[in-house]
Image 1: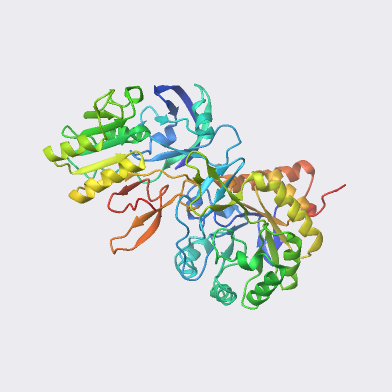
Image 2: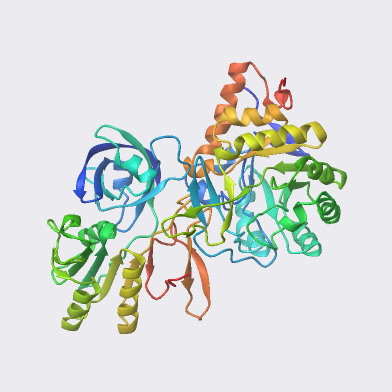
Length: 303
Length: 256
């Protein structure tokens, strides 16, 4: 059986499968179904200082091979998370990635600093949520602002800093490079693609926020392309995500240059998706006679 | 809560536009309570979201669940095309269901496909003095009347069965005759809002079963949240899948 372990920015993980932020809460619900220690990591529901109510319903709808959501970063706040959820999460043998956002550069820095004396293993900075105006996407579009906020937040981060990038830009590689130059330890991509859904019978938008973020297998080819492009430009680790449903999907992202992957929407289709994908990745490696999937990272043959 | 391959024992037309599916799902049936639901995978590998389906009946001894499904969109159409012997992934039982709270007289209110979970609630909580009030579009849409464990009053939109009235009319008449200890309701939002107003105005305890599009179905993604009033005059969002689908009528804030 292949060894799936890796060291991501100094953090040891038993496998490269990470539950994606926003689809997995703080892990408690899925832990009722299986021991979440089976995962390499968990990127927790996006957090901010003081918490946030989120958007009104309807918050999600299905689309062809995917879904749109506009949950709007509802969360109980970093303070509440650290007090009520983190101790439990740290009792699990899994890397805890604190996904966070803010309303200003200063607020982002304060948020990163709030995790300083906690056992959180990594930080994932969300500058790419398409569903809230002050939820960071304003900082995540232009390379100059990606650089500025990454530089500032890195100085306030005690843990390795992952910058999560939006695909809703003209050239994502410029933002990947900006994050790297500003000191990011890793990048994760892609966040959701902005879309809408129309109820033709009521002749109105389906989502109460009008627009939502598209995820699921529908976005996978786009995500693969962007990971592949970014991997050619940056030297820091890449965490790939976008519609991963199987171990072979995870392998595809790794071939494109991702050292680890995140699984989001697939948790809804199959609540056991994360541990199943880890198992299937191992089976893929065995079939391909690969000792550890890290061996294939970025080795995709192109024409 | 288990995710199992449930076997379809039968599938037939329950009423116009409504399919009844009986599943062999002993691991879920043995835990299921009235008002809970299962999260069913669309059996075609093309739909990423499961479909929350309420339980019309559950039989722990036989290990069966009875569902009434409206083939409304492509997902539910696929589910309704399941045939005897097919298997389908089901996660459940999920959510917080109805609570009889030892009530002596319960008035059950169901509209359309919402009659199904009310049938489950009646099986669990109906007493001799209880009564159900069902609203259907026409007589062709009627179901859930024959094996009811208490008296049922049906009304319809066209008068083809019972009075041509909204279900709240016979409900109000019954309340005037005898005030119930509890009301349980499931149906379209305008019906629920009307029942809520009656119950809250008269200070009758009332439980409403809500419906929302769902993501995870287990409380993690916050995709199905609805606005809930708090006793202190403020409000919050609660999860239909985990905190509900059944909520106290005083909590529910219809209209966002």
